Each structure stands twice: as C-alpha cells, then as structure tokens.
Length: 190
Length: 190
DNA sequence: GTTATACTGTACTGTGCAGTACAGTACAGT
DNA sequence: ACTGTACTGTACTGCACAGTACAGTATAAC
Image 1 (cartoon, protein in one colour):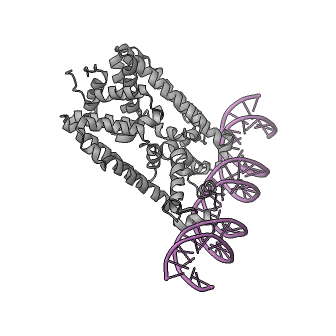
Image 2: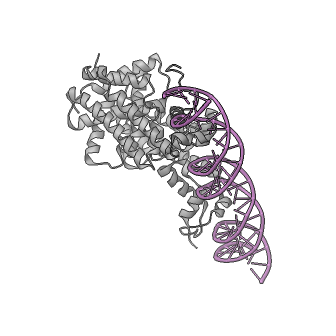
Image 3: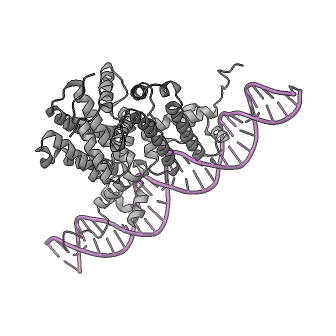
C-alpha cells in the first residue's frame, strides 16, 4: 500500500476539504454535517469520529485558512528576495493566478458574528498590510502617503477577484501593469 | 391621529427594517422570523399578515437595497453637476460619511448562492462602474487606463469601510485627498 | 353599534439538522 | 488467527425554525 491512495475511506482531511469547498461557494452557515456526508457518499456518523462536533470542524477550517495564507505570503523566500517594486508586482500576479482570496468573502462575513473568525481575519489583514507597507517603505514612501498606498494596494488585491471575476485575460495583465505603475509612482505636487 | 405615530402596532416597515438590521450584522441566513418577532416584542404570527413567507421578506430586503442605492448614487443632482474630479471626491466623501456600503458584504455573500441577489449586486456594481468611468473619461483617460482607474476606485470604495473600520478621523480625510490625487493623475512614462 | 381592516397571541404540525447509541466491518500490525 | 484502530450504517432523540389554524382585540368608517 503506497502513500498516495492510502485512504480509500473518508478521512479527516476529506471532511475538512468538503467543508472548505462549501465555505467558498455557500458560506459557513451552509456547512451542514449531513450535507457533507451526502456529498462524500457516506453516513454522517463518521464525521464524529474525526471531529468532536460541528464547531470543531469550523475551527479547523479557520485554522487551515490562517496557516495556508500566512505560509504563501510571508513564507515565500523567492518573493522576499526581490526588490520592492518587483515584490509588489509578484504579489499582484500571484493573487491573480492562484485563488488566494477565494475564502476572503466567506471569512469576512463569518467574522461579523464570530469572534474567533474576526481575530483570524484581522491577523491576516495585518500580515498583508505589514508586508505591503514594508515594500512601499523601501520605495521611499512615508507617513500618510505610505498608509494610503498600502491600504489601496491591500484593499484592491483582497477584493478585486470577488468583484470582477476570476478570468485573467491578456488585457487584465496589461491593466495590472498599469495599476502597479500608478501605485508606485510619486505624487505630483498639488 | 397624526402621521408620525400612526402605527403603534408592528407594521410591514418595522419587520423590513428589523430584517435589514440583522442582514448587516449577521447576514441573511440569520434572518429568522421568530427572532425578528422576539426583537420586536411580538409573536411571529403577525409577520405572515405582511409577508407571504420568509422568502418574500428577503425579496423585499433586496428590493430596498437596490432602490436605496441607485437613488443615492445616480439620483443626486448636486453631484452630477460637479466637474469630474470634484465628483469623484464627493463620492469618496459620501461613502466615508454615510454608510453606503454597509450592506455590501452581506449581499455579496448572499449573491454566492442566490441568483436574484447576484443579479441585483451585479446591477449595483454596474451602476457604480458606469458613474465612475464617466468621470475618469471626462478627465481624459481612455482604454485600459480608464478601466484600471475605474476598477481601482470602485473596488476601494466598495470595500474599504469593511476592511479598515468605520471611524473617519482627520488623518483619514487627509489620506483620502492624497488617494484621490493619485488616482486622477497622469501616469509617468515607463 | 355593526362591520371591515389590521393586527394580536396561543398552540399546533412538519422538517431539517446536530448529536448519540450501538452494532458491524476492513485493514494493519503483531 | 487475534486485536486495535479507523472507520461504516441504521436508528434514534432533541431542538430550532417555517408555516398554519384559529380565536381574540383595537381602531376607523359607516
């Protein structure tokens, strides 16, 4: 028995992944144990072998998102070694190419009435702001102008995919170049 | 009996408003008839005098949002008569001052699994894009650059309040001025 | 004072879903 | 072959909530 198809039965990860899938498409309120069970083709009892209760799954989903995100953004050595402008460009590209903000809408909504979700979301936003702010700082921006650019960059990249769709055409790429050029350039006086 | 306290009992509007309040704070899934009834201090039966069922309330909420929004943005004559740069500035200010995007997160989330909500949200985004695009067009921007600025402006203003909080300090106002200055200035070559 | 309208509350049914009890089974290690 | 781990299904309880039945009440119009 090899590493790959080790589990023919429904593992903890399968439940977690099913939960995450529903989270993206319908939000956390739609994560129902028996629906997940049906979509996995098994009875729901097995769920309770892996998780104490529904809440434990939700915690695990939040944990997953937290870890997954911070890993990609701050744990990427190639990006960290780039000069600041290229670093910002690389983030733009990654957010477009991968679906890094796929869960954001659902989590932001969840955070409205769940303290732990709010904490995790806040933390994620802080990490993004920190990272982007450092790049703009290295480009020479300070004070309110630094804050302005950081917010603009983070806000756009955190939400654009949700608003303008997933497809990334050649035109979208040229627009991205223009956008980043605008964001890093000096303000003309008054 | 005067116009003002015409209704000492719970009117249709009161149910609608209660629903909208919950929509903002907890999302549409949390709009439960008996919860609304409890918060209004009455039994839930009266609800079914005003609305056929829960779904009818949800429709009414969506309708309300649609009408409320388009009225404020495109039906404002003072703003329409301003020159383009001042018009954009005025939108920025209004979005900051009033809570124009209060419902956006909940509706965007709702739109993930409800066709009608998706339609209404799409329409609202289109109205915003149209309006902003016209202003940038009058400022001389064209093609991909026009698209880039429009997306950036609309995306920021639709989401910033949700991400960075509601408070608008003097510092935030200065940042807003800088941001708008950046958005309307020409791109330097290469 | 009668009647229509606009509600009100009590009390019910039905459904969807969380969670549990319990008995069975497939497989891996010994 | 034996045993523990990791599941599986059937069958339940209990609760939250949508929606209904029905009878009562306050007000306004006639």
